[in-house]
Image 1 (cartoon, rainbow, N blue to C red):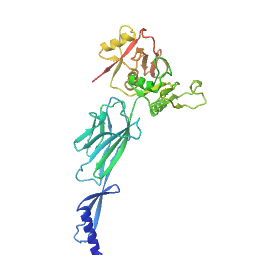
Image 2: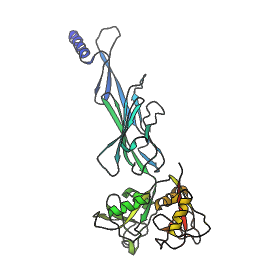
Image 3: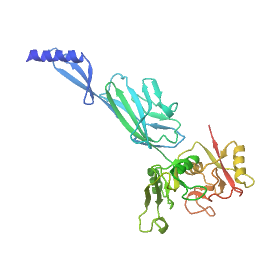
Image 4: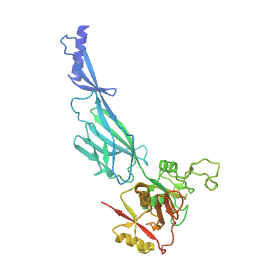
Length: 362
């Protein structure tokens, strides 16, 4: 039996090598020969486990700002010397379920970023084991599922972090009237207003915050829906409970609705231009340009109202030809009793109003 045990030890040395590491069942095993002098040939296994964790698996941010997606790794038991690990970040956009795209890879101080993330991402590395991803600036389509993968030899572990934008959903219809846009036109209309089509999750969150709107609008998933806080006959009847009503998936080319847009951008300043006289639309656009900016878009006005607290009881032109004004503190002669962005629709462009301008601060 003693001879058989010695032969087994010798065989393992030949296969693994003295002090060699191997991988099995999610662990690294460090083979250690007992050196207590009793020559019993026993082998002890020291398990070294790689853990990858994130204290936040859902991170909210604002478009145009920056964000850090947390990812940390550690070994159990704690190692006396650092190991050479590879860090990889992947991204799965909201609109592309099932397909991951490379964001960046890093080994030591060397790193490489890919695609639209080039020049915008880096690892934070604020402490040993910190592989958090820093993104600056955030672009409109950066939301989705991010996966942090740590690779050490044959072992790899990963953790997922979801990024969403804090923002505001607003209903939008064509200047020509209601229910005139197919899906593609609605998507383009939102983008022209510094926004994009809202997701169902974003519309649902807006409904929870009190958005009540009786006109159906396109969402990013190709459905047409609308949020109702106070049930009424014109909005599906009084027998239905409050909620987000749905027309289901519609034909993106043939069916026509309004749009629900989502904006999360605070990259510039929106302000009401104090001008001695009222202006028509053409004059309004010109004075904003003379100010070193441009006439504000609808999404920019909503973002300023939501994130900066813009409160102005003065109607002003916007870039799409609409006239609106933002109210934080409802008061006499400033519309309804609820906060919001008031709209006068799309009046003839020769009429005189104020104007909201927009400037980017670099």
